[in-house]
Amino acid sequence: MLPIESGDMSPPPSPLILTQDELKKIAAYKAVEFVQSGMVLGLGTGSTAKHAVDRIADLLHQGKLMNIIGIPTSKKTHQQAVSLGIPLSDLDTHPIVDLAIDGADEVDSNLNLVKGRGGSLLREKMIESACKKFIVIVDESKLVPHVGASGAMPVEVVPFCWKFTQDRLQSLFDYAGCVAKLRSNNGGEDGEIFVTDNGNYIVDLFFKKDVGDLKIASDAILRLAGVVEHGMFLDMATTVIVAGELGITIKNK
Image (cartoon, rainbow, N blue to C red):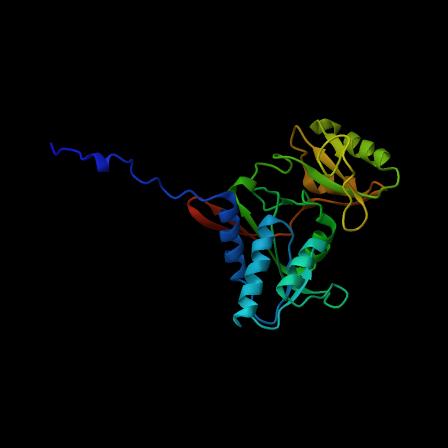
């Protein structure tokens, strides 16, 4: 048996473990491969979509993409795109969007999404419902067995009598053990109320059980006066790109 020298006692190198943000970046860069010159693009909001917007700007500056027009889904993304020199427009001028790239808070097995935990669900849904293709980029932690499994399902409501609307939303999903909470900036009970880019509030719905038929749930929410929009994006994603420790998985509708 060979003697072991003292300098050889270190453990073997551990396999490379990617952080959640690195996984998000991988998914975002893969999605940008679908972007072509001359496209009108929906620019998503959030930590994952931010990587995609950065990448689009890089390719524009390198001359690998040209004549791109972006439509941002939030004031924050608008500021990011302006700072990066991405030409911008809106749905009034470009009512048909070639491609949108955005993240999601949850993705179920049918590619239904929960979005809006960052607060931008209304503009995201307006723009992404006008898209020919909608690519969703997530890391594998966002995959869920059913909508609402990992946390809040946001609903944007008008400020007028918000508590009345919140109570009606909670009653609507009593059967799923729903708890409805008005969103605050610090997450606490006494925090300053979170206000969306549109001047509205968000009521977060927390479910203890599966809500069942999502289209029935969607219709019931939208029938309530005082509700502006909800964070279930049903049958909207055309492609979901999932980044995991073992690589990229692409799921198509």
